[in-house]
Length: 357
Image 1 (tube, rainbow, N blue to C red):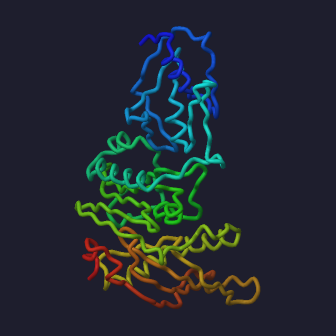
Image 2 (cartoon, rainbow, N blue to C red; image 1 turned 30 degrees about the horizontal axis):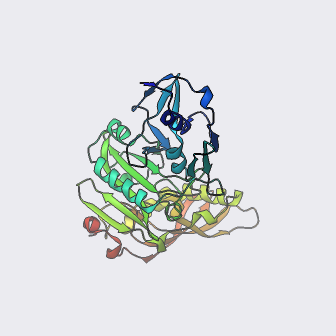
Image 3 (cartoon, rainbow, N blue to C red; image 1 turned 180 degrees about the vertical axis):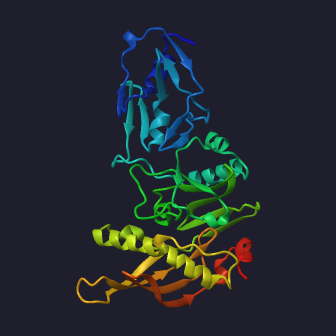
């Protein structure tokens, strides 16, 4: 495509910025220096913003493509600026494009409509049995492989998580990847979280967590094809963000990891009469209530009391239990067990109530 020297071209050229830099104001008053050039539209170039696919459109809703000039890719200032939450204006008299940000330099917060559109897109594109290559091709997003063995009781052998509309610099602190980032979703630091369970390298199940209003909802696609969508129970969420890391907390968490196999064995025995599969206990759902040194100072004999909240399936709580262990040179011994509550039938989604005996 060969462009001629005309007024339309001058305005169109002024409305493009080079990909390699970020400009906040552009002045295009150089009529005497404009000459003919060769330019090409490339519709194959994909753009992402914070890891999310970005489709640029003009004021009439027509999709825009990058322009290639002398090997450089140029993008429309107005579409890019508005995607970053800025106001873009053209001043005809001064031939100047002005870009004004929100005042704090931050990217605009994702809207509710954008979140719901992404949820609808995921539901329409993703299906059970899809391969990993197909999923990556559909979403073209960065994903994280979850290595903490969450939800292996549902039959999945591997788990991935995709996060959409993530605020720049945001990270989920002290929350395992298999746990819903309820705080981040409520604050719109994360727009949508997609969690995929794999079996034989094919989609075995998936969940979508997203905020709507002042609640976080969880959509579940089960291995048998059934679906459910319900608000996440905020009352049972533990605010891990309020805790600062420390040497004491690190040692406490290591102790919990050591005791975890003993806890799982005991809880599998306790719950075998009421649920059909063994419950799972995640380290971040265990609270250390007390640690007592039984012997004299520097005597290596301890009693540790912990509060555990086991779950099944997509983090359905089945109860709450308090266990006291004695740890000494002789090993680990369970000294006391107390079942506080559960399982409660109302905590189980309809398609998971078959787990109750």
